[in-house]
Length: 235
Image 1 (spheres, helix red, strand yellow):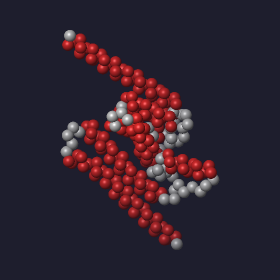
Image 2: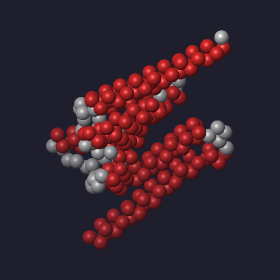
Image 3: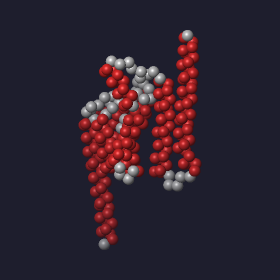
Image 4: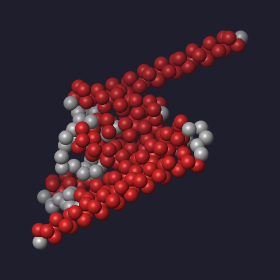
């Protein structure tokens, strides 16, 4: 009897894993097909739907794999820049993680997608597009939807655009926010892979966050002083 029970459990686990793989494949296929809908560079609204759906039904790691697979396929066959990855994987994973930590609250899944894609992914897209893709004239907040939409609305209305009026401050904020991203990354790693974290391990996240904040402050002071010196020399 015990042997048959063990076999039934193993068979049920295999069926569950197979069902997960089928659902994951369906999400990847649907994501690739509907991704061109309403898409502009740096924004793919239909990807949010796929991210949240996969995060809720399968969890953060499957959602991450789904977003990664969709992004790679889009880059290979549709010629999409690395934004296909940076604008999806963070939101997918954070959506699933917050949904799990909140014990099944959908609002947390949506919040994770907004923060992961709209803020974290958008900020990470700046160095990726600048260093790997060779794009120029970008800032840390260039791909954040609110900043991008603001400049587009101003252009449509014929208003003055002040998008780059304080690029130094925007870049400093971007560097500081990267510290928050690193902080979250350390928290996820510690919670998932360290069974009994000690005082030193628990303090790493604060050290990382402080390092980025200090770097942002130093950047702002140096660049601000340079801009002031340039202005004075012109006068």
